[in-house]
Length: 471
Image 1 (spheres, rainbow, N blue to C red):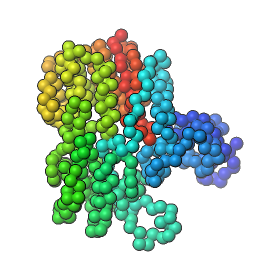
Image 2 (image 1 turned 180 degrees about the vertical axis):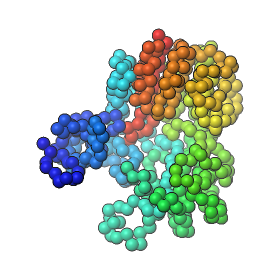
Image 3 (image 1 turned 90 degrees about the horizontal axis):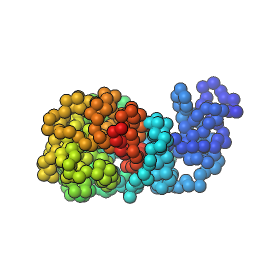
Image 4 (image 1 turned 135 degrees about the vertical axis):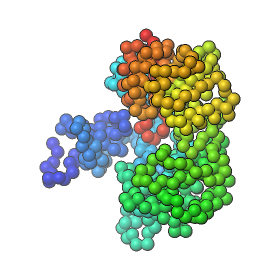
């Protein structure tokens, strides 16, 4: 029984044992028949919790006290753990993370997809669980999150500007980051240099409530070749001399930065897609090496943020595709063409479809860069393209789909069924929507095998690859 509590006081529970870990990484307790998802809790741990948010069928809670810790719990390696919204599984050894992710995918396939007999291959984990990202987006703030020590000593004289990541659960609070273990250097060095340079010169930082401030965000891309791209987002077009001076500092301090760009975003929305990218210094792209491919990456290009693991993912797709040069492949949601181009040398031809015109332009550019001629790329909605494919696309023997997190639109599922392509390789960044789509396809297609692929260590996120054949 829970203790009596004052009206409107937060619900609390004491001495609760975590019984499971759910697919978004929360520990699970079931006091009085209620299902609570608990942050930063592992199975077998005994905790006191406080409910922070309720849903119709469950609620979310935070730990207020640990009575017993799980034996596998380890000390997080990042000093910002707990406040920063990223890398929330650092307290769990990476090998254990992979076991849980493998189980999550299997449970989702059974529960949502009805795939009770689907064979699973072992999860493909990352060789490096730190410094694996090739892109980070840092936020500027004029009211950074203060530590308890800073608050206790008083705010007077404290510099409130900072550059970093949002505090967990707070859109309006940014944690000033010292060292992040997600992206290799010079990412931290660039961020610290930009912060120190702009604070010293009194440049204004963005405020998410008033929507004022000149500096909004800093995007750093690092390539496997060592080249770096920097994109700065400004809140207005004022101070062009200050802008050029900032670019001078970056260019002179970091020789590996071969591309500097900027965006003017005066709207309340942080999304960059609607805004023009201005090329300021160096090249307008960096080169990413992906096995035998070279890919030009532009400021708005979508490419897997874990480049090394992307290579292993594409090798898996190519291995399962088992092409002998006679087949035509259709690649839906092809982006900048990375999978299509990766498979092209083993196929008779590849047709790639993507709704983002800029991405298709990048795909065509990358085909020319790699001197690949047996590919065709089309810009348009996938469901419309499937209804009326160009004659040059050919008759597909294999369909590769890599949709966004929302999965396949029902009309795309129907078009796939109507096309009766003999085999499908479905790459997904969201196993839940993938499982839903497998259920929708199940009358015509049988799922042959599944392999989870981890792209994001120390998070609950997991990718999944499934091979299907026409019944």
